[in-house]
Length: 201
Image 1 (cartoon, rainbow, N blue to C red):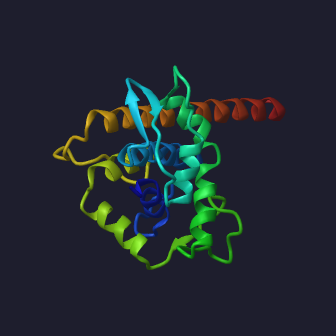
Image 2: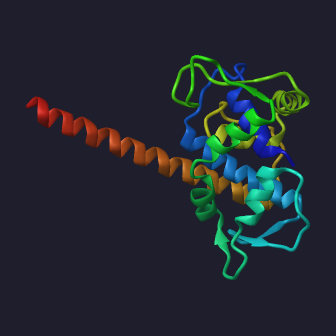
Image 3: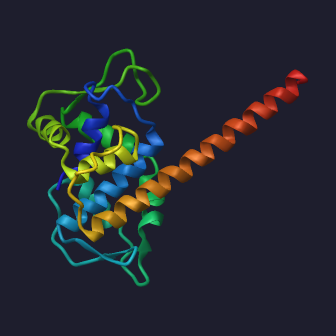
């Protein structure tokens, strides 16, 4: 539990020195939520599909929001479809909630997250200590998700292999981030071509 929050804190933490794009992080957060929901036994996986299970309300409001957003009817939803649907604007939602909870201090110079070189900073708290500990010890789930969204370099080769369900989530996150990067590259090429036309190049 708490993987999505820990990923968000690690991404914001100045110690990482590696700002990540909002889109990549949102996809990673949606994947982390699946991991957390699996841990809370709110869902299981049937191949690449997320199968919801009856469960009491969750204490974490963000995770409860994720649980209520699940597709509850067969054939259920593939993980990658969930990442795109749930991930839309998800980093901003996490930022807002963490700020409301007093876990994030937003710099005065930056009124929009991810739009400035100055990132909001997690304040000292048990939540930050937990995220830092998981990062420092190369906890496999957080380390793999952080690498998938560009927060850190590749994970160590000797990292313990997570279970099959976690690996399915990781693979879906990597595929989605790769697809998003391809879209960004195409747009950049198209924008450059358009600009060249106007310049008469």
